[in-house]
Amino acid sequence: MKGLFENMKGSRLQVGIILGSASDLELAKKAGEIFESFGINYETGIASAHRTPEDAARYARRAASRGIKVIIAVAGLSAALPGVIAAHTVLPVIGVPSSGGPLNGVDALLSIAQMPPGVPTASVGIDGAKNAALMAVRILSLLDGEISSKLEKWVENAAAEVRKSREKITIPKVPDDVYME
Image (cartoon, rainbow, N blue to C red):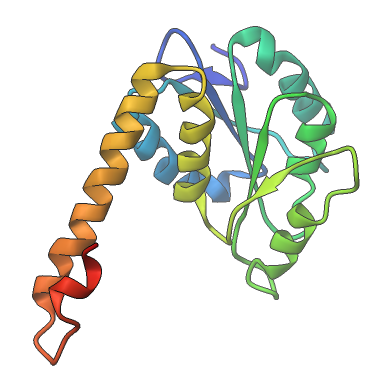
């Protein structure tokens, strides 16, 4: 048994994804797709800020020594997990509020966005796992030229996709030269 936290990709971890519950696994998979496209090693674990707070704290304290550079913490409802993780590490923590509950994730978004001074936690939009992963990639690109090159190419490809999508407009559209310098 590999334990509570399993390294899914093998060597040289770079990102840890920690979930408040198994119900957030789909969000972790979305983030994982981004990391895999950039060749970034990551792992996914579950630790509840309320039901297993010791596990969450231990994970956060041990992350840097295990090679992790950025942590993504996914949580819903009161969304305490990103703050708990941030309180136990100096690594960047990106909180992902998950939808659900009576407020459909708004409570989680506000909980993550309003961390007290001294416990910085970045936040993305509700269910914004893809953006959290891309923010982690941007952070890692500061440390790794290969990731930086891949990110520049990704940005170029994303822009090309938007430009190509203009061809689908069948009603009166903006002339192409408006977008040119």
